Each structure stands twice: as C-alpha cells, then as structure tokens.
Length: 461
Figure 1 (cartoon, rainbow, N blue to C red):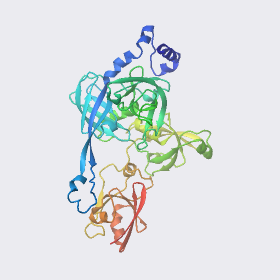
Figure 2 (cartoon, helix red, strand yellow):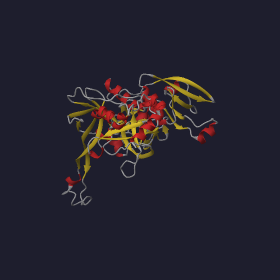
Figure 3 (cartoon, one colour):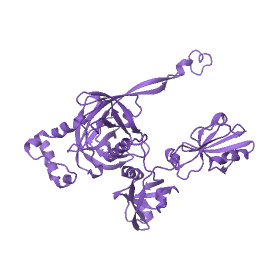
Figure 4 (cartoon, one colour):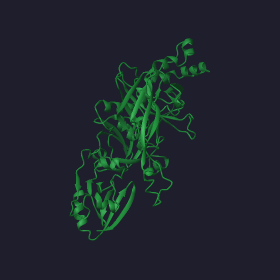
C-alpha cells in the first residue's frame, strides 16, 4: 500500500515541484516511508504541561435561607480551581521560542515544556492572542535547540502530503499522515471571526493542539488547532493555523510588541454568493462586498465606498471578511497592501497603508464632579479602536463608560456601556454629557448600547 501511495506521489511530480517537494528516488527510500522527515522534524515538537487557575464557586445547599446563610456564608465564596492543560508546541528558534495555541497556555500560571529528548524547561508567555488562538513562549535557559523553518503557507496546495506531530491524549509524541484537504477555511473555528485555516485529514486529536503540521520536506505549514467532531475524536477534518500568520506573530514578538496587533480596515462586508452576484449584475460570484465603511478607514481615504467589491489583496483572492482580515494581517503592520477593487464593472488596484485603528493612545476621560447629576461617572469619547475592540457597528456614535461611579451604578449603568443619547438627544462627545444631564430635568432617560443590545435606563434625579 505504501508503494502505491508513493507511486501516486510520483504521478503528481509537476504539481509537487511547485511546492519544492521531493519524491522518493529509490526502492530503499520508499521502504523507509516518512522516517527521514520525522527524524528531522520531530525533535522540534514539544509537549506542554500547563496549570490554569480558574475561579469557581461552591454553592451552599442552604443558600437563600436567612438563618443558615450566616452559618454557611463561606461556602458561597468563589474558590480557586486548578485546571491542568495538556498540549503541544513547536520550537521556532535555537534559543527557545516556542509557538502553541492560546487555549493551551494563554491563561496559564505555570508552564512546563518537555522536549523529545526529555529535557524539561520552564516557560513564560511573551505574546498571546485569543482571536488567532496563538501564543508564543520563551524557554528559560534554552540554547542550541532544534527548530522548524516556516514555509510560505500561501504556496501550499490541496492534495499535498502532510504530517501532524503532537501529543494526542497524552500518550506521547505521535505522528499521523494525510493530505491537505482544503485551503482558506473560514469560520470553522468559531471565535471572533478571525478564523482562517488550512484543512487536513491527517488525524488530529485532543493534545495535538499547538503541534506541527509539516510538509514532506519537514517545513512548518501550520499549527494544529482544532477538529470538527461530534464525538471529540478525529473524523479526518482538522484545522491548522497557517504558517504565514505564525510568521507575523513571531515578527511582532521580536520587536517587543506586548499585544498582537492587526491592521484596521474600518469596514464590514459579506461574501459575494451567486444570488448577490446576480443582484449586483456581476459575471461570477467572487470577492467581498463592502456593506459598511468608517469615515476614518484607510479604504475610505483611498476612495473606496459602500457597494464596492474587494477581489484580492496583494494578488491573493479575498472571498470573505475573515479572509480579508487574514490577508491584511499577514501583509504586516507598517507596510502597504495592494487591494484590487471592482466597481461598476471596472477593476482597479489601490495601495492601502496598514495601520492600527486610531485612538490607540491613552483614553482622555471626563469625570463628573460632585455637583453633577451623576457624580463620579467617568466617560470617554468612542474612538475607532474602541469600536473595533467592542465589536460595535462602525457607525456607532456615543461615549463609553469607563467607571459608572456610585450613583450611576445604582441606576444600572455598567462599565463598557456606550451612552448613545440623553432624553433622546444624541450624545457624540464626552464633554457634552454634563450639559445634557443639566438640561434633562428631574427625569432622565439614557439610551445605552450594551453587549450588542439596546438598553433604556429611566430614573429620577
């Protein structure tokens, strides 16, 4: 069967040559299978043991009883709960930089890394990002470690052979084989919409998270992150974070970035499917339709507008918002991306500067004094960065509450609320809030945006 597999590989020689792969050259090499690649790459994949302290709560069976509450009060207090996490990681440099998944080590308080040679290191997280599910570790006292080279994941092709290396179910380092089943899989991993994955049928199981997906040259294609399964076991549908995103993550860590940053597009959109293409009079379903555009967006400044279709970034196709975010991210902050636009049947290209959202500096807050209607209430102007972080509609206007103070908290105002209006008068600047409250009279109505919901708070001063 192995001979038949490699015979199939030899028939794909023209395709695989584009990816700089190499097929077996002799019967002896065929008999060895993947052994040379595994021997070369496996030492750079490590096991990770992490402890995560979570706040739990033990509920008293007498909770709510006015008499027993006094005697069992301590039982209702939150108690820390230690959760052990098991996963894998990949060494990216000889001095001990290791990449893994955020869900493996992102919240950990104690991390131990064990190499294939049974050397053990303590590690600390130097950069982590929940949305991309990546975390970068620094091993204490590490030197001369084997490491994997990152491959340009945009050159990976469907049908290539791939190996997944990790520690499934904690049984020890394991290698599984398969092919690349799909590219540009978006939304399959849930999260905040930044998911963009390589799909493989190489078996991936719990514990493989953070491990390596490599090609038959031993180069890193991606970081194994999750599977699509109802039972919890591998069904042959696994997802890996592309190596190009890992490369940008590593670059930002090396320049001392404390929080992973993405270029700000200042837009929202939707994939162009068949029905939408027909409605727009397009020849084919391709690209991403811009449905909303912030007036400070670099795309708006470059002349883009709602209704335009984004076809590609740096010559690589874009078919969804998640793919758009990925393409801009891997292009790199501080660089310029060439974006292909379709408008009224005409295709054009435009250079877009890649920068973070405005308003990234320290917030300028306003605190109401003791003579105000809501003393101690602290608010700040809503900046594009806050709009992005809070996942608000791009056209949201208002001021964000950073501290409700004692009075506003009693009437229901919460940190993170966006005050949209006072007694139906639209509020756009923090400095206008004292005057709006002074003119409100004895009864006040606040229109508030809270975690995606519109809330009305009515109270008497």
